[in-house]
Length: 121
Image (cartoon, rainbow, N blue to C red; front, side, top):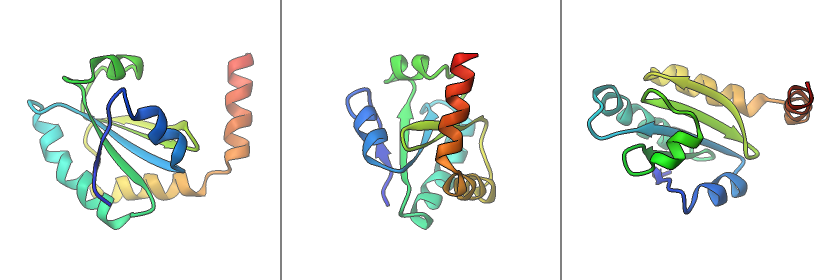
């Protein structure tokens, strides 16, 4: 699947209409981001059932700020619209695939219950 450019105009729709969404927060001037880009793209080709989106933090500062991004690249993975993984720094291809496979295995009823408990506590 091709990489989707994520903006403030399409993020909500992208997260709500897809089961698993992997987001790469990046910027054109960031060396590690440029190194990680091809890994993210190649992984998107290998996992066509997952939506891979890139968010240019220079152009989408409000999105990056709202997500609490303080260093790039940062990868966030969402399942059923909920954030279930976040890591700053470039991931090796095997680690990125492993994370996504773990996200596929999550029991989302348990995740929702944990989120509910943490918001109440």
